Image (cartoon, rainbow, N blue to C red):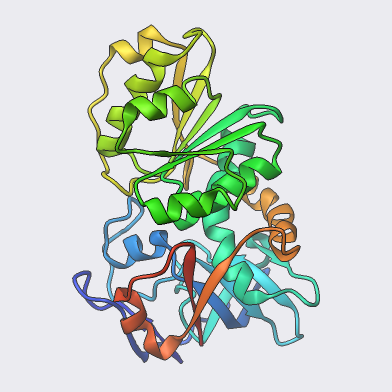
Length: 314
């Protein structure tokens, strides 16, 4: 079969021939891949920098996708661990890691949105003790996952959602997606004024932006004993930061992570049907860009527009 094949962590995947995966266990089925999203998580696997990377090459990237069985079922699925990735003509699906999509579903929208939407959906529903009426700050709200986080926080009942980022054009876009307020991260003081008393922070950035935002928010809180849950989801700015110890003593701050390994697989899978239903409802703003799988090398390096997610079509 043809697939996107990584033969060096220093180069983009190339469209090439790769051995077709074989079904090997109960509950597995071979599907024709209909669409697979090019997510940041996919990129980090393909360049060997993701924390789950084992450094084995060659490999086919892709962690999820939409595929069709020989019986005509349309499935959204998360690729089994250590399996051939989803950026290929065919993939093996473990039905325990898949949901059946209803007739009329747009497979491209699902492939584009499920992975980035899952990051905030799982964080709010499985990691934070978030309740309707709470308030949420999204750090890195101008990225694809951050834009969806703004929309999903509102959907889950947040009374106030604040989007923070550094791209003026993308910040303006957030106000059309449900953000009650947007803040430029170049000004920690403005962030503190707007978001000092939020209940949850969804952090897609880490590094220097978080180093600046965290003390600014905590110093400005009207009641430092009021719990603040800071959820580390992404590291778009940096993988590390310096955390002054006094911040953990001076306020009721809880720092947790949300991602592969911190949430049981069965909990993630339990959330897929509801999230798939929401995505297929058309209530979320999703902006996929279709690219033929044969053009994967060019798609890998071409910049995307605000809110756009590349979806590869075999």
